[in-house]
Length: 588
Image (cartoon, rainbow, N blue to C red):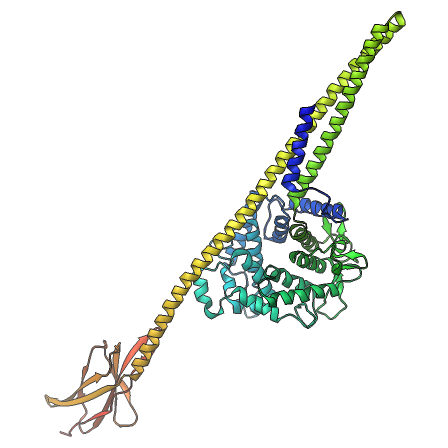
């Protein structure tokens, strides 16, 4: 028994040391949030065993919540994403052309919805999938051009900052070269978001009034950079107060309607603010700034929850489970658990299993001890009865006591078996908890390693791109110098008339200045000195310096000029025209 008690104590201590003690750091409604997180995670996971891109935010929430996503689920999602990219030739923002009444098709257009790339980068990175190689396409490279991602409006840079922070700005060298001066950087994204902060301290899709959805998203993007500069810190400190000012007495937040209608309290708006507060590592359940009318932002999230059903509603006037609301509220709770409570689904359920196993083992131990005590008392009573037996009645009493002792012994044995089973269950729970802890730590280590590798690759790509850009600049400078030199080149032309077999010929000889090579020379002729020149010949090489014009018409005066031609890239450039030289052909 002593050995069993020691084993139980060791198991209990192992859980406490591995996962922390339960109870002291939990808010008053922790049981409710635990249930909402666990029930929703189980419900979403059950329906997403073979997830596709349609379950992107479900997987994001599950991963954020620390739910054990299987390798099969990850493989299924990646396969679906590969299919999507292959069907679009890797271009998620391109809209196909449309058919006109005459049967012709319009040209495809770019929607500039670059947040689509960002979404998949974030989710792939969260699940340990390399976003740079999905069916041979990079989801990261399209975000390299700052001028493109900003055409979407504020959503583009918000999600680009979150995506690129997650993957280490790992653009390929070619994407960096192609982006040129418009290369996306963390500094550009942050600067743009801070410059778009409204006078009331928040952010909005349109208009000048802070919108909780956009405000929450911007804060989520900027939160990791809180201590990067005083400017960022000041902007986020203002935003903290703005979120407080936007909160309703019910604890939730209202969506600003583009139609101009009155704002409507929604679970999605509330979810974005809970994400933002949590990402700042403030407690949306206990921080007084985010409690109105006795209702915290977490109370507000739970007010949209269908207890026991694993789903959330969109608005309270439509009390039915909504898929989008469920996804956003679930990953909002996941943010709360990860950044504020510092726990997750696996740890939380391991703690619960440990508590249940420890309680069962303690109960079994108590039952065993009671049974052993009863057995001992029955045996002592039987012994006493046997010693005092002086007549048949005493003998019968002794036999009865003996039977009771035997029954107590059987009960004690059963209790011992129950205690052994409880110990086995506790050990199994400890083993499972340890396995899940190891899996969680392995996944986190893989993410950290992937980010480290991505940052190293990004640095290498930047170095390669810088070398390529330097090479391009040098080539460009060389070409500009060549173009300037070609344009400055002069040509001197001389003529020599000759007569052969009664016909007149003229030999043109020219000499160019400078050292710039020409690809060929053009020769023009006119009957007038100042106009009417037409091309009569171009040399096959730039090294040719003479040309003979034959059979010139008698009694005419001919004017000639020559210039060099050099092709740089796809463009032709010309030297200066030579002097105009003339020859007069006699009438005879």
